[in-house]
Length: 147
Image 1 (cartoon, rainbow, N blue to C red):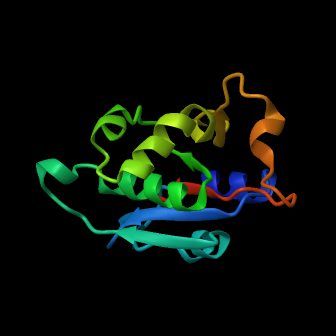
Image 2 (image 1 turned 120 degrees about the vertical axis):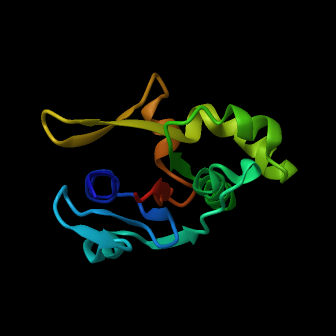
């Protein structure tokens, strides 16, 4: 919720969420909910659900789906993983080449400040203007895990 709100309201991005099918968890640390809460769903441009696949070759289906969604949109994606395995093992060669050439620029690593209750990104030293606009002056969407 904090992530989506920050990306959408503060940074003006469209958010394409990626979440496991039948997602469940606590809502703001309170009651248990199934599915993406309505307020989060309304903030997202769209939400894609990935199946829960429980085997060695599909340990992180949500990460693969987030990368592929970002590849198809040529946009930034929010994930703290190193993606080293995907750089070596992504079966879609074009997607793998895209990730190799753009990961440092497009991957948004993040943290939650538990003391202040805020979401923020670890931006490194990428020049701000390099990532902010697509041709035509529209902001690139962000693909974000909604969990």
